[in-house]
Image 1 (cartoon, one colour):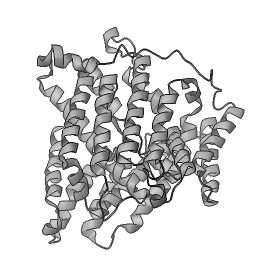
Image 2 (cartoon, one colour):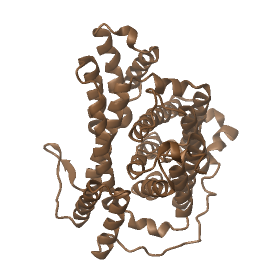
Image 3 (spheres, helix red, strand yellow):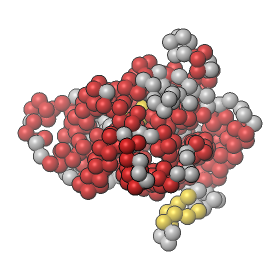
Image 4 (cartoon, one colour):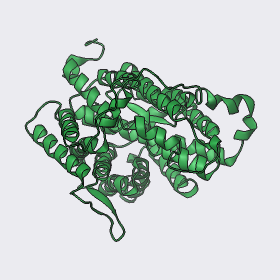
Length: 445
């Protein structure tokens, strides 16, 4: 096992990988609750009954899709990167496709399935890997730093430290709110542990915050420990295949094409950004290229197809994996640990109530600090590099989208390089992406 996952080469061990895998799971465990709530449109009253998905079935699909994705990423690609149904894509699935377009959720699942199948073809052809390796190193570093700012902003928002403000768009929240105070406490504890170089400091910071939260009744005690009454998957399992088998004509329209392209686009570049950022943080990038990128991308694509068949929106690589890397994870064994925990979580669902946003927010904020360190390796002395790198980085938190940041930066890169007389240094794929991103903003965004 140690030899297969290259423990000696990567300078890691079972303890670091287990703590890293557990830290990643805790940082992203919220998806087991948030994804079913989002896809079932539980916050929208008075809809026809057929528009609501079954909560229990979606929960099972979420856990199983995450488990399969993590296990494949860990065993096949050997990266400490976890996967689960993506935030943002689930909101698009529920509120745009179902609620706005009025498309049945069954057909929406078929759209996810199609995007996943296209991903598999692109991954096997090697095109996705070539695209990632064509991205210049400075932009890869900017993507990592931008994602760091993005997840820090999410952490600050989830904790209530930063809130919406009509005058300035964002502002300082009420720091006397108990959950916000708990998040601040957790952040202080985590910072102290990290400064003292305590291995697994982020993980232990979350555990201490959760315990303190329960003591002061900010975090509710779990209602139970184990529940063996596993929800049925019958309401959603295999439903994505129904339109293909029985009503293929219903898929032949522009709206369905837009759905597939949107799922395809966002997952492609969110995954690319996450892979590059986490691999850079773990120092797994070699010669400005991502080793085994094809395997990692294939794992992501297969997880999306599996998730669609189970009954959930697009499964993608999670930037919360960087929390596990910060806690010591370096190999695919950490992803295997995370995948197994997703399987176990099906039985221990009541305990997930303990992992609130106030508990996980400090981890996201501190990981953002670690990821922004990539800025020091960008060549800021060259303006043609500084502009696209800066726009890539700043557009992610301000646009609230990893894909948007990548798109804006990658549009400006060819422009600045050509203007600087360095057109030949730009990879042909980057020119292709320039055109694609412009078309994306015109026709899809």
